[in-house]
Image 1: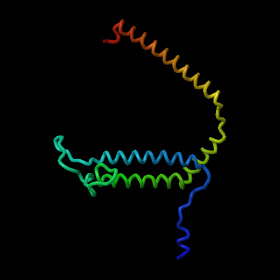
Image 2: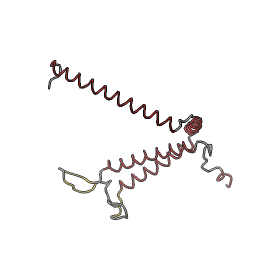
Image 3: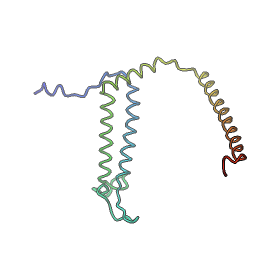
Image 4: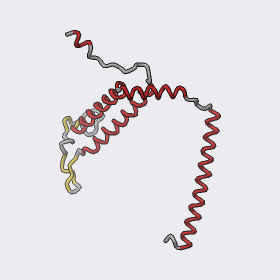
Length: 162
């Protein structure tokens, strides 16, 4: 019996490798799960309306507890469902990011490649940024001038009504 319980454990696939990449990917995916759970909560619809008048609550809006600290609506079926979806999604993200072999390998390799990148110095970064902003301003100004001139030409020629 002791042998069977020894093999049941959650293992971290390649511990110590790709830690930052896994954390960033995990947090971003958990934020996506939070957005989904919040959207589910808002989509479920707590109140039932007929002809624009609130006539009561739906099943999702059924209150299990009237007041709880920090919860405006009280404890409802919709809130419990959304919360379970959030925690279940976070658990799945954890399992997928940490233990899925292909994804973990990809994130480990990504972090290793990021350490090999030759990052620019501060003065190179500032100079390149200035070049990009000036180029955008020149191209934007050129496109604006051409747009105004073509619009005037089309209005004068009658090709564009107005």
